[in-house]
Length: 487
Ligand code: NAD
Image 1 (tube, protein in one colour):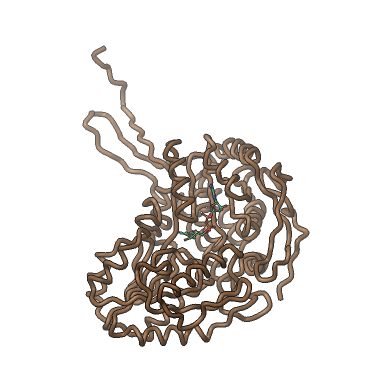
Image 2: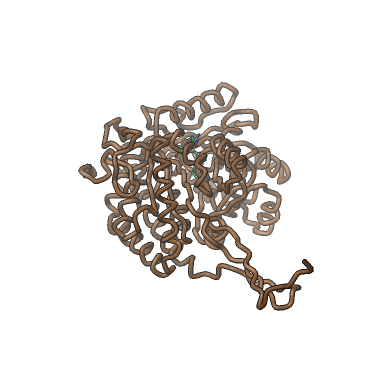
C-alpha cells in the first residue's frame, strides 16, 4: 500500500511562473481503483492559458540564447531529480492512472532516458551549407526554435508522452505550455513542473496547465503558440489539425491505432500467443499500440486461440496499489462502458468469448474473442481495453488486405519462422511501425516513432526526428560584398 503526501505546493494550483491559483478553479483527483478522492489539482481557464503563453513568449528569448550546454545541464538535472523522486512519481502513476508498478517503473526510466537524449540534441549539427550560383555568397540552412510550443497529452502514459515532446522542445530552445489530461495531471504534469523548477529551469519557460477540452482548445487557438504537439484520439486530433491548418500553425499529431498481429502458418505459435497476450493486455490494453486485432492463419488458429486464452486466464486483475496484479482498473466508467459495449455487440454479431467478457466495476477480465469478422466492432474499432479479437485468414494476400482495411496505420507485427517472408509481407503494410516476431507495443526512443493514415499526420518522435519536429528551418545567405543591382 502506497501512501501519498498531498501537502504539496501544487495542491489545487497550476504552474505558471510559479505555483498559482488559477482562474479556472480546481478539480478532484480520483483513484480509479477505489473511487477515492486523492487530492485536488488546478484547472486552467482560457485566460490562464493566455497569461501562460504571454509569459512563455518573453521567457523563451532568454532561454534560447542561453548557451546550449547550460540548457543541457538543467535538463540532465531534471532527469536526475525525477529518478531520485521515482517513488513519488510511481505512486501517483499507480494510484491516479491505475498503472501496475512494473509499468510505472518502466515509464519513469524511459522518461529519464528521453530527457538525457534530448539534453544532447543541441550538440548535434543543426544546419546545412549549400553552394551558391552567386560568386561570393554563402548559403546556410539552420534550425531555429519555434517559440512557444503547446503540448497536449493523454492519461495512459502521462509522464512519458508528456516528456517525449516537452524534453526535446525545451532542449532545442523553445518554451512549453503543457496541458496534461486532468485524470493524470499530477504524475504527468505537476511533478514534472516541480522537477524542472528544482533543476533550475528559468521561470516562465515551462508552464503546466491541467484541464479538459476547453483548456486545450484555448492553447490550440492562441495566436502566439507556434506549434501544437498533440497525443490522443483521432477524433480530437482531426479537429485540432483542422484548426491548426486554418491558423497555419505547425502541428504534430500522434493518434489512435487498431494494430494487428499476423500469425502465419509457419509461426512458433506458443511464442506468438505470448506476443499476443502482452500486446493485448499490458496496461489493460490502454495503449495506442495495443494489439487489437489478432489475424491468424486458419491452420494454426485454434491452437493460437487456446494458448492465448490460457495465458489470459492466468492473469490477476485488481488494485495495483494493494495487490500484486497484472492488470489494474480501467481509467474511468466511460471507457469501461465503451469497451464492454464493443465486446457485447461483437458477441451478439456471432463471435464467441473463450474467456473474459466480464467486469467488476472498472476491473475488466482479459478477454479472448474468436470468430471475429471484419464487420464486427471488435475488428474495426480501436479497443483501448484488454480484449483480443481473433480473425482467421487463408493466405498472405488476405492477411495484408485485412491489416490495410483499417484507416488507422500505427503499428503491426508478423510472426513467422521465415524472416524473408516476413520482410516481404511488411513492405505491403500501411503502418508506421512493424515488428517481426514480436508484438505491436514497442518504443525505442532513438528510433523515429509515428503512424500512417488516421494514426497521425506524418510527424515522427525520437532521435534525429526530434530536431526537425521541434524547430523550423531558416535560410541565411551571406554576401562577401553587397551586390549592385541594375536599379
Ligand atoms: P483524447 O483525445 O480524448 O484526449 C487527449 C488530450 O486531449 C487530453 O489532454 C484532453 O483533455 C485533450 N482534449 C480533448 N478534447 C480536446 C479539444 N477539443 N481541444 C484540445 N484538447 C482536447 O484522448 P484520450 O481518450 O485521453 O486518450 C486515448 C487516445 O489517445 C487513444 O485513441 C489512443 O490511441 C491515443 N494515444 C495515441 C498515442 C500515440 O503515440 N499515437 C499514445 C497514447 C494514446
